Image (tube, rainbow, N blue to C red; front, top):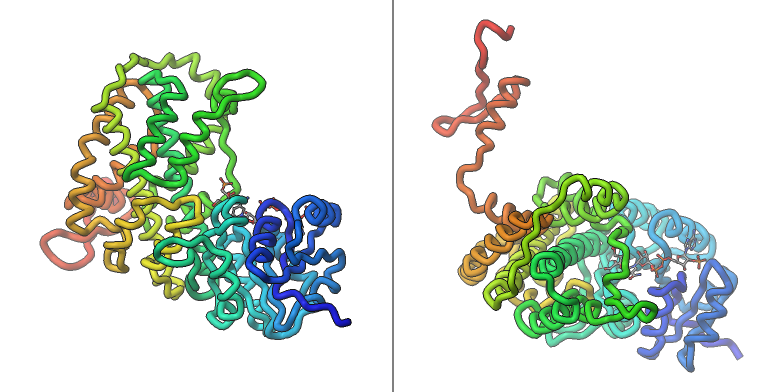
Length: 472
Ligand SMILES: NC(=O)C1=CN([C@@H]2O[C@H](COP(=O)(O)OP(=O)(O)OC[C@H]3O[C@@H](n4cnc5c(N)ncnc54)[C@H](OP(=O)(O)O)[C@@H]3O)[C@@H](O)[C@H]2O)C=CC1
Ligand SMILES: O=C(CO)[C@H](O)[C@H](O)COP(=O)(O)O
């Protein structure tokens, strides 16, 4: 009897790949799997496959031959060279029209290159952002595929079935041309960095100014999560703060070293934003703060040289509301910056991204899912990509600016670093300032470099000799 071919193949059986393979199989598709290290495949099949139609392969040629035509293969391997290596291994066995889907966190410029190369060779390619971690991969992630529409149509049914569902549909859409999917996932992660850092700064104030026990902080975040701050990141924060270390009985968070790692997507977002000329200070500073966190020895030494001024502040309902409103404000600005960046990239790179759809597929499954997204969706457009222009938003922000000022004031008085909360404030204040001091910068540039300047009272480009007699 000829064995039934698999509907789809998946390469890369680490946390994401294993869970995604199980998710696809549980939706009724037969899945072939392959992993570079055979032992991982064996362990996966032995420990996690329980009746799902998952066929392990230990040879790449057999793996490809087990798939129905045109072949559809998802890669869930480490970003960077492993993706190129895996594609090179596959190509000799593929036929024109076969489809490779890179579901990892690949840099969008790598995806751009791979898309061009594979398209020229007659293959189909999708660069697909996947968000939701291991739980999302198994129970329903947010999927951000980009590439050609033809490629998307080959796997649309499967992707819609495995994606998270909300009242606005499955959290998957064709995001746009070529590397659009990975660009959008990269910015998703940038927003993720900014929100995580904002939450961490609020926690820092609660811990070192309000002197709150961790359990109490957890209760506060839990209560916030039942209102306008409802989001996956606030939800995991209250759960993290409740957790105790089994060895010491201390709050788990207190035994974790304050050194944050990063795999690069936040940094890439900032780099892309700087290249495209879109301000993303909250994301940039969240990356910087992770970098600073790495200098643990230096921080420990310097902290002894500069004794910080801290005076405990009594917890009050008013100040807790200030903290909550500040977090809302900072979360809003993270989305504002990220969406503006996506909008600009879409124009610059002809991605054709539908911003409203991007927000829709971020409503469920992904790490930045948040109730706030419903509000953002009411106002997002290419003309209002930073989201600051509608009446509702203006009043939401105006109502909270006083709280944010108070939180910044308390942080400054207590010498607590709040780079992302203050960057949200400064981003907003700069964008809403008609007359910035950039006129002085232009004058300075013209003084030292004859870079010219424009005038407020007439058209044209001007240069003056600032120190007549001394220069020239
Ligand atoms: N973890 C998460 O929460 C999320 C991860 N992602 C992205 O999804 C992808 C997979 O992530 P994750 O599951 O965490 O796994 P990892 O990023 O840790 O990657 C491990 C997988 O890559 C394979 N691999 C590594 N180097 C090579 C190579 N040179 N050639 C072939 N295969 C190689 C490993 O095979 P082997 O077993 O042989 O070492 C293993 O299957 C990554 O791009 C990640 O950034 C996206 C969203 C969330
Ligand atoms: O893509 C993800 C979540 O959306 C991954 O978990 C990613 O690793 C998070 O980034 P970093 O490791 O840099 O914190």
